[in-house]
Length: 525
Image (cartoon, rainbow, N blue to C red):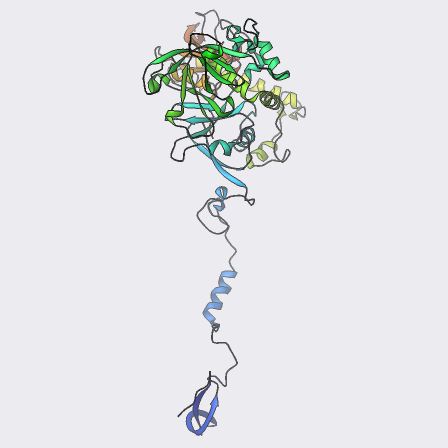
């Protein structure tokens, strides 16, 4: 019986000498030896590296060629995955990815902290989108299927707002301009009519709109907003006229006319637990009798149709008064702090360090003056450089407008198209859409845009907001001395192009009720 122990085995060794060499052919001597007795000691679990001349040749050939840089480094992450490096999360684990849409339906995803407010997100988008100015930006909460929208307050935490959304809904955030967010601090008379304000402690005592703001911010005492509103009855298409009272304690309605007696007051909602939204396209979606519709809903619950309290005012001023009062009564001094912060100049992140190639290339340019006979000189004064830039732009525009207005040119080259590159020009949008755009960015005096007329060929329309209403002025082309001009007052004032018309009315009212102040722009991300 042969014994085998561990890695050892029986071998029969017989030594035969042939030409001085020894071979193992087996023999009668029985010994126990390792399987590879004559080879170096190695472990069976490790592979043996076999060097090959061919491999060495390839390595030496490849090492002699310089490495070729990757022409598309942004398409590959460090782990060679197809995920874009810009979409990877930052090093810190407390960042969250949110998607924000522009007004052109394009979106941008940004990483924000868990406590990021709407103001901070707006500043981040201003930097990443390279916006020309940093004022009057806002985040708009939009519910397209329900036609609801509201402007987030600057102190609201964005992730907490998104936490109240339905997972299967179409709710989104819109990055846009809003000039009317704090306009009631500047012009309270326009937003709070005295007929709608009363002192809740003394029914016979009236208050002015300025006193309303001052008492609320200084002493914390809250007056009362009152008036008739049309309310949509649940599960019915009918609208009922009801007298409402808005107090610091909540929203109430009267069951008997406009009576304020406690036995006639019915509690409707608590201000701390609701948000107010404006309703878009309310006639079609809810059968509203007018377009001045808004609604209130609980702030902690997802948006459901049965939770909406839809109200309709008789005009835009009444609706603005109610929605502004809801915000003012709910947040109080916090709104004043937000207003003060909005007036202060925002600090750019990481100082004044340049963050992209475009900024570096622009910083390397210098302003030159070639008007003298001694050659060009570098303009070192920033104010002089800006003045020279404006003069050069205006001189070029005058030459271009003169060339386009000459009578001997072809009709295809005659009209000037410089207005098409301006932010206030919105092409062939309709009258209703123009009103919607102005309303979306704030019904403040001087908000304007220019669009092509849909009823008059080769004409334009100036849409202007004044006293919470949008007015429309026809801009018609005319010829004088064989040259083409534009006018709004039957030829009394002529403009060589639309840009000159806008620049003139930014300084002079002319036939307009107010100077042009805020261009209605379309934000693209």
